[in-house]
Structures are given as structure tokens and as C-alpha cells.
Length: 408
Image 1 (cartoon, helix red, strand yellow):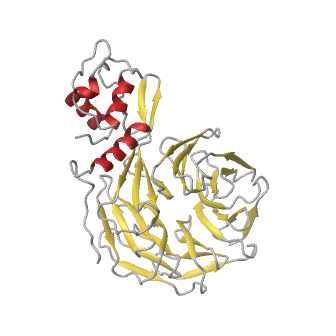
Image 2 (tube, helix red, strand yellow):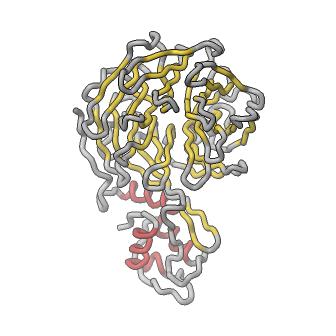
Image 3 (cartoon, rainbow, N blue to C red):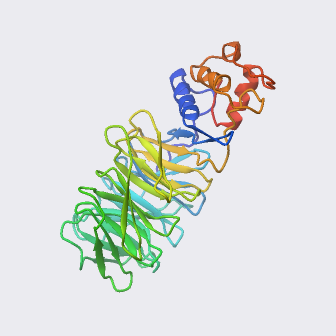
């Protein structure tokens, strides 16, 4: 077993540069609403993670932790809601390239091996890893994976152009392709509210579905614009199927009953490249952008808002965590990120405690804190009338306890 330690970055262990980065994350992503500041605060974790491991897929385990795939390091990682990371490798073949990961009906974590052409499994308590390949077509390149309504694990084969399934106890693998367009490039897959398995077809800009009992495959494309490249796919809080368009820079949605497709454009830096997508605990759909380096949220009405993650993060996967926050992988920056959804806790921007959030007082002090000023340099000429917190230690304590910052 590979066990590379655990623990989030300790308070006080930050370099000046990393502290500034953390402060910028925590304070530049705040959303004020109704006089009470709700926060979208990003925190990153990497202590215990192999350098260059390239985290991709991420899911929630029955143990209450987040589990992710380390594609380049051939590891499966676990991160607690507190940010403590441990990696596991024993039992995984070299060059496996673990990709997508999901929690199975047996309580174990199941993952695809993009390079190894296998389906893997890890026990979240014993950490035993097993791999299965019998029945998978050569060079199939397994990609997405999810639990079906029949209790099987269903997966897509990007090169094999098939939809596969594996029984969690017998480990028997079957593949299905009848009705699937040649070279369609099946990618993400999800269980739909109608009992079908829905999947994205990256190469041909379609959304497909397969019946778990009859294995009949259908494809839908009317309403998808141009070279969209559908990638990630989930069932949304509204009962519709939502998907990302990696090259179309849109979020798409298909009604499982009418099959009507609508799309919503997103923005970003040098093209957003939306990849992973998940249903948020706030009733919205959340996604991440690989090229645009942003976390995005889209409402049921199609209103999009985005929050940037600096540093060329290369966001890949995202999942709603057991702590009420959103967790995502940074493939390029080699980190696991967390963004508060504004429900689990609130960041109170009333720094001076006078019950008023004022950009000329509270805002000035936030900016100064981000510039790593301390003492009177933060509070000088920036306290509002009726302030109850008047010193830097009081304001620092308020920020660290209410907004998740780590000012020293």
C-alpha cells in the first residue's frame, strides 16, 4: 500500500506567496446579497499528494470522504472534508491511468483505467484494490462510470465505442454497441430519472441513452450547436439531463421525456472548456472549466455565474461533498479544490462589526489584508461609525473564523 501521509497545510506554515494566494482566493470570490455576505470561497489542498499525479475524477465514498483518481501517478486518493490527503496504490497495475470514479452499490469505489483498459475497485476501509479486464475489448479506453438502476456499474468505452457494465459481485463484464454510431466516442455516463443510462458522445456531438434491461441504444442531437464535444453528464435537480460542451463552451440540457435540448453559453479565459459537472446541494448545477480555470454555476433558468481559480489550474472533475460544499480536481495544478456553496456557512464581510457592509470601510480593510498589511495599516481611516471591532487582531480573528482565511 502506498501511504504518503495526510494533513492539510498547517496554519503558520504558509510562505508569504502562498498566504497571499490563499487570501486572494478567500476574499476575491465573495458574493454580497441582501446585506449579508454569502461566500463562494475557494480553498486548495495538496499536502500528501504525489507531485504531478494529475487528479481527474472525484466522488464521495460511503465513509464520508472524497475519493479521486491520480491519473499520472496510478493512485487512488482520499481526502477528508478537513482536507487530509492519503494515497493508495497497492494492487493497481503500472500504467493504469485511473480516470473516472464512482461509489458502487457494494460500498466500494469503482474506477475506470483509461490506459490499463480495466475497471478497478477499491475498498474504502481496507484500501484493497482489485482490477477486472475479462470481457473488455482491447484498447477500449474506459472513460465514465456510474451505478445503474439494475445494481451494475455501467461504463463507457471511448475507443471501443461501446457501453459496458460489470456486476459488482461476480465481476462479469458485458459490452453493448447495437444502435451506437461508429466512432461516437462515448464519454461521461449517468443514471437518468427515467431508469435509462444517459451518456455523452464526444466525437459526434450527440447524447445517447441505453436501456439497462433491453440494451437498446438511442441517440439525440437536435438542439446541439456545431462541434460541441459533449463530455460530462449528470441528472440535475430538475430531473433533466445536464451536460458540458467542451468545445462549444456551453452547458446543455435534455429533457428525458420530450428529448428537447437547450443550451446556455458560458464565458471564460481563452475558451472555458467545461469538463466536469454535478448537481449542487443548493438546487443548481455546478461545473468546472479546464481551459478557463473557473468554477461555474448555472441555475434551472439558465443564469450562469463563474468564479476564477488562478494559476492555470486545469479544472477537471467536480462533486457535491458530504460537508455541503463543492469539491473539484485541478489536473494541471495538482490540487484538490473546495468551493463553499453559500449554504453551509456565511462569510460575514462586516469586518468592523457595525452591522453595515461598506466598501469604503470593510472593503478597504479586505483589500489591505489581501496585500498582507497588518496592525494599524489595516484599520487606519477605515473603521465605520459604531465599529465594535477596531483592531487588527479582532478583525483577523473574525476573518479566519468566519471566512476560512488563514491570516497570521
